[in-house]
Image (tube, rainbow, N blue to C red; front, top):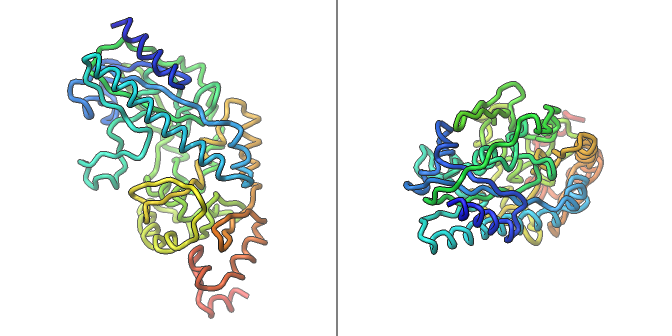
Length: 357
């Protein structure tokens, strides 16, 4: 099995993976529910964990609001490749006599939780497999980070009944995350708790990262329903200006209340599909917490500055988007016909507009 362990790692690398590791039921023992690989394959003994980096050339133009589509296309294609590699490895192992289950890169959720897929609980966590097998560290954000590519990576995994040799976690002292909190400062939804930490133990090894608030926060902002930061000075690539709530329980109603407006906005070429999004069509508008994070702290600072000085996005009638100063963006929104303006913000009644000056 040592020879087979090396073989599957070699297959992943030949197919495009940059780093590969192995976790087992023993090394994942006593972990959270989504670290239990037997959930997807009752006889599972091992998990192959690997990652592919995103193209760094597309990140800063995206953060500057100069080019959205290049990053979106790279992310989609990289995620598709990751899922394909999982299938290739699983098929190889099955032909060798080892039942195996490939795991998609994203957008697959458990159906047996109280609210089914709406709870957005993965069958197995790529992140837990990644840190325990030693292909990355947890950053404060909860994203997986590497010393070469920061958090700009896509994770993949294969669950198998083959009993492979596990790889060791990375030494904690090699983790470049210094708690700078630029990931939090780049998130308009407040998804990461600033004062609560998650502590996870798997196979006797401890890991920690910031506790995530309700997934609806990320759904509302990263999903593109809205994107204007509470400061009013910058936005994500979403042209929505609907208010971002303070409390977790207010986010799902906000999604419901803006779903019709979201669906009626003009669409650009491209995008991806997500079965939980109204209309099932989704465009990449955020991901800032992972894109700002870079091993070089000066690059992190520069990227955060790019984001917060990128302006506010406004959508044109043809679906294209442009970023303007906060003042100019507000003027352009106000000049829209009411039937179009309501797709992006709450329209005050005439009395309120007059009272506001």
